[in-house]
Picture 1 (cartoon, rainbow, N blue to C red):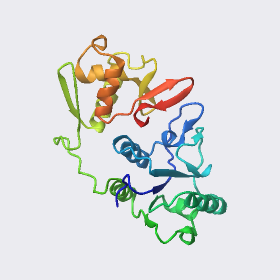
Picture 2: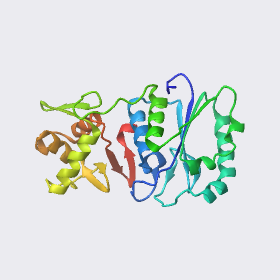
Picture 3: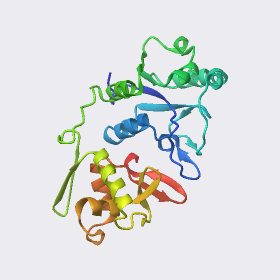
Picture 4: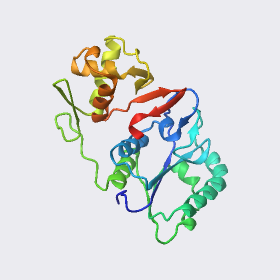
Length: 258
């Protein structure tokens, strides 16, 4: 299966314990920061399509749109919570399925969350193809990737440029995976190289740190921050698969998804 621009597709993914702790409200697709959301956001960055709708099954809010703005919170899904949410979740799913002629549905949730969807089969129209991810987290992520892209994820190799991003700035070429960029950034932060917190409107989220995008590009290229612009830094990071966030009017906007 592959999400394309010819048919309506629906993705239901469970929320993650890992969340960005930004104050105020954030779009749900940005607030949750588990592995499935990294895969999904990367797809949205690379394969923008208006025919994919994403809904998130939340232990706190039930079944919500990925665009709904939510606060930070801490609630785990238990069997009891799933049973309590189930009637509301099924009612919301019925409304969603009646809105558009979906042809593909992927349910990527853990076992406890799946209980909150108990009975969903009765709502599925004949023309809708349904897939439910199975197995451990790694297998579920592989199934999510293949459903989105229509092909298995390519194996990552530190010596292969296939899975690496490429960027060039002032004659300096970078060939790195997102994981390699983040690993380097974490090491430089620990070593205290430069003022990584000195950002104005744009930053890169790394663990619980807000890292200046120009500082990171300067460290990667060896170029002084004064020799390139903030927009050039964002362009380089985007080409390397690194997310950059803009702070504007007390709200958070992820530039790559705009």
